[in-house]
Image 1 (cartoon, helix red, strand yellow):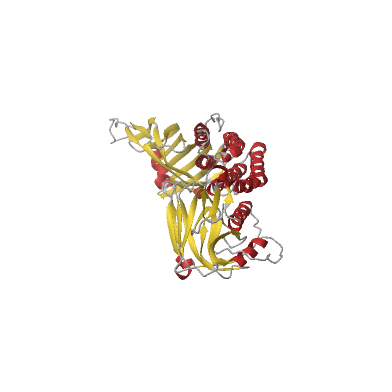
Image 2: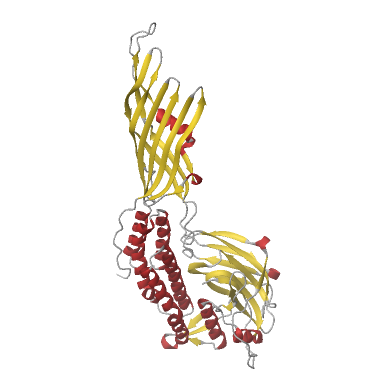
Amino acid sequence: MVASSVASTAPAFANKAAPSRKSGPIDTKLTLDQPHAVGVQITTAAGGVIVVSGRKGAKVTLTFPAGSVPEDTLVTATPITKTTGRFTSKGMLAGVQLQPEGLNLLKPATARFARRGKAKKGTRLVFVGTQGDGRDLYRLPPPTRTRGKGKKRVVVPVNGSVVSLSHFSTVQAFDWSQATLAELDAINHPAVGLDQLSQNVSKLLTQKPPVTVNEINEVMDQFRTRFIVPLVDVAAAGVANACSARSIARARSTMQIVFTFERQAQLLGGGEEGNAPQIAASLLTGVGNCMSTLCVQLADPRVGNYLLKISRDLQLLGADYNPAFFAALQQNAIACGTFEVRLDSQIDHAAPDYQWSFHVKGTVKVTPLSSTHPRGPVEYVSSSGSSNSECVVTTILSTKNGEFEVDKADLTNYDPDHPGGDRVSLVTLTFTVIPTETYKSTPTGAKNCGTTTPPPYDGTLWHSGFEVHHFGFSFLGNEWLPDSPPGFASAIYPGRVLALGGGYTITENTKLEIVHTPDPPVPVPDPTA
């Protein structure tokens, strides 16, 4: 759910019917206190608390439990100093705008409003939400408690100042009169499905307390039938008939809505434990099948991290499902993100008295989440050349292969809505074993040069030439261009000449490639097994 604005108001009920007006969404305009915004890193492991000061000494405390966010998230709470619109110009106690807008919480957070002084006579605390910019105002259910047992169990509102949040962008609290609130209920009809549910439950709880659990369940069942089940059916058809990163993203969003709805039902005293897993089981099966085949279709190693994040989010949502299902999803995501960094480089050294040419190739396999830097061989494909002086002629006796390591292979984040743009952020290599050449010198027999054959010696002309062209062996994102599958991106340096003076040049013809080489997927088990 998205609680954009929470305000507390006092509901009061008019003795006569409210004026007849066309029902529909109510939009408001927010005035924000940006200088007093507070940002806190909310972590998956520990949650977090944000405290902001409101108008006239009011204070809002936002509490996020552990496991409420799918990944560590910077949440910013900005105080609202004024809400302008029909019925909202007066009575505001405090409010906060929460960002990032639209964030769905895996576990409900709470907003506690503490006022300074007493409320005006004839008013009660009422909570409302809006979208982040103040659009589409709706009421949030008040704090409740259950009383009784079995069929006689009822849900009653309590005079508390805490409201639960399952999604957010703005939350506000108002002191409103009964007449004002009755008129608001008569005309307000939020546009978003979950917001409609909040509005209807809030009206039920405040207009007819106490409310039986069966009455709460009836409202929930109607909403489940009219909104949740069709939403799941559409998302399941999407991943089954048109498997894509977008359809998986929509399915994930739908799963969040389903579990948010069921948790809200349980918070209000209604709903049966286990409804969400049953409703979303077919959708999760479709997601698993789609994720296991999508990798090869897209030929993009970045999709591995994208799918890995989604699989973890789904596991946090569906804790009651088969753990082997999520283990298979994560294994396939890692397999999808596997790629190779391939080096193909020729370095030519030229001067008036010598000419050398070295051609090497190397491959390193990179697997996501690997605890060590991957390594691979650097092998000589060919080597040739000679150096002529008055006394000796030097040639290549032999070569010894080396080894290189991928220190960094940072790819950009995959975005299904914007698949273009740069694919690579940074690739950095290290030569853990430098390839070497062994040179031999043969005397020319020239006068005054002697006839003793010098001993062989080792050199690293390929490595030194490559390092001159790529100091630090770092290859930035702007050096990489998209490649055709199974290639992903290439950095090509054709015929680059570096002149060092005196007729000495070092020329390279190098190609670095990132090639998508996914491992075969494992079968995905039944999530409900």
